[in-house]
Length: 237
Image (cartoon, rainbow, N blue to C red; front, side):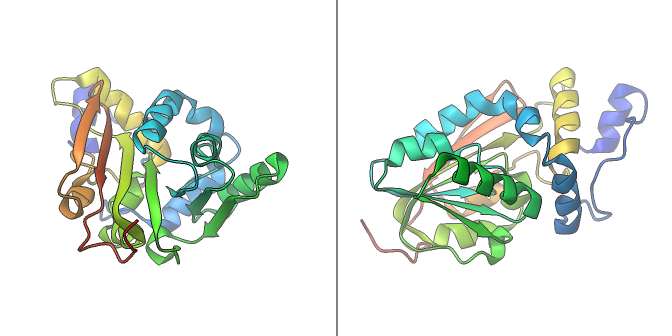
């Protein structure tokens, strides 16, 4: 489903311009502008996804002392739950390309006096990620998951058998018009292209043979799996 087909369902054009590039591919410059404008209200806008965040962190099956990646970590909303799981001897590493979003994450770390949370300010595909990470969270990171290079960069930094959990928006079946309207308007505030919303986990599935996908209410998914040894450059646990 594309934005034009949704407009036909609505019977009129949407009342805003979708922040997509002309090629309908994710666009880094558009994303940087988008999150610069959203940084101040992001925590409120994403509050609806907190129950999903709890489920995702639980599915990572983290253990004390492990290292976990928070991919496209935004303002750091997952840090507290991740730290609770890995404990003071573990480590949380957040990757974020938006200067405005990562600044809020830094402020959070400082306020909480967390000494085991580190930040990498870079696009995910270019980030220099420590090897031998145990798990990675992709929480509502559609544009990142549309990039095979970004996905591969994360997976190659992980141990063989490392756990991956991803969640985000997806198109519901065509008959679920109210759900797809909600997905469209949510997407307009959080991603830069509609590409891949049919199967946002496509590139993960190409690299993770045991990937499992669950649909929640038609418009949200959670996917989880483990990194195969042939992809990982980390060491076995």
